Image 1 (tube, rainbow, N blue to C red):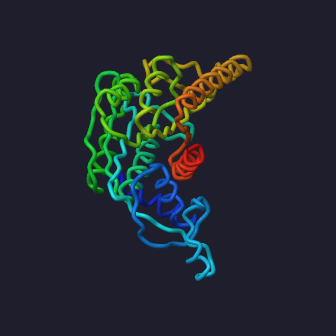
Image 2: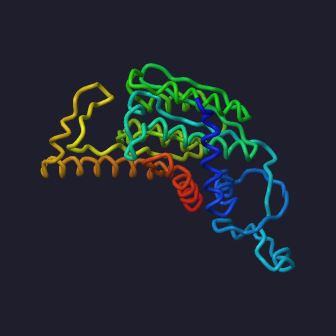
Image 3: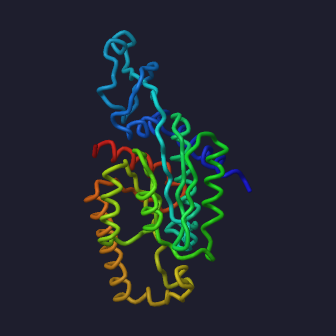
Length: 290
């Protein structure tokens, strides 16, 4: 198997070539507000940088905007949280399995943390069990985390129940972490809403939703939840298609409202090639919300 982290780094290199280098790193660095920082050096301003970080004297001397760059006095902890139940073995909107998109997203966030000197841990699982991997540094550690997620989410896994993994975090994690959650299109419920508010009171939380595949009349579909057949041919009926679309809108609106009320920034992606841009937008939205 090709190293999963190598795929992540290759995707990030393509993004860095197409965009101004440092933008994604800058957005990541803005997540931990109030962290203890020491001045490091100067670099060129890129869109998305905080205006308050401009060094006006150096800018005047150089003739172009320069940003003060800082290093953290202490490392932060990033906790990757994802569902590895059988829902994540299903197809996403872009045609890949959801777990492939999740691995890419977790890898990008984990690698950003690694480049900033932060440590990365993992909590994942299904309705039967939750696995917790303590936070460490290093690329080899991050590769092991990604491989665990990739190997765990299969059609034979137990049912998905992300609430169990989030409850585990609420019970066991002390201190203030950055929680990066990659999830299916879950529905809002009162217990989940209460749990998220509890977590948000302690941690910074970023939430990335992997979009479901659309039900079409041309394909034979089966639910990975219980292996029951999905009558895809009914999708061609205007009334059924309209009802399905309404149900999706209601579910999505409920989830977005639940996350908004909890103070959690959400983004969404449909395929792995959109992960970098999706994460950049998510980080930027979170910075502006703060």
